[in-house]
Image (tube, rainbow, N blue to C red; front, side, top):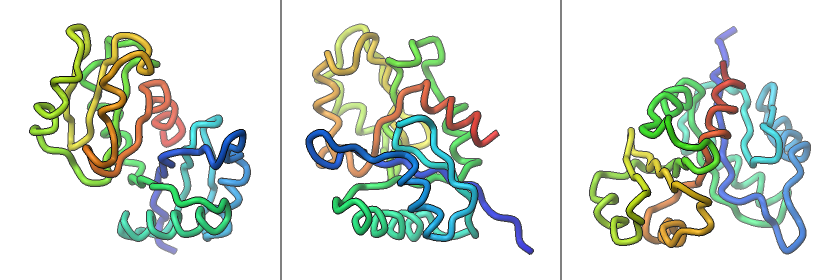
Length: 178
């Protein structure tokens, strides 16, 4: 029997409506119903790790997005990475000296090129740092991300489909993967 591939799926948002959030057990049940093995979540972060036959990432994203819309009644962008690629992402953090809750990565569906840094520069405060590593945008907010104008510049319209995760969550998922 062929070995299964380990995947990480990141939901763009786990807020369904005012006062309603996705419960992680429901997310795990959804993944199991899709035939994904050993689904597990990291607290209430909107991330799920699972095993599946090797497939194109876009196909897995589309399958999970369709199931999510059916189960929860709302379309949500979902980014999927192979487990090995997630471990590479975790090792690519250009700001390991930053605070784990203030260093954020925007995990992208399609890789960003360096021009994104120029586009975002007008939103960056003097003590903030930006970098692109393997197509994903890393930011050291040097403070609460919600307090900076840079956060409002990170829209899908401007950047493309992606989702934000802090360094603590990145490391937690890397530990789950092993």
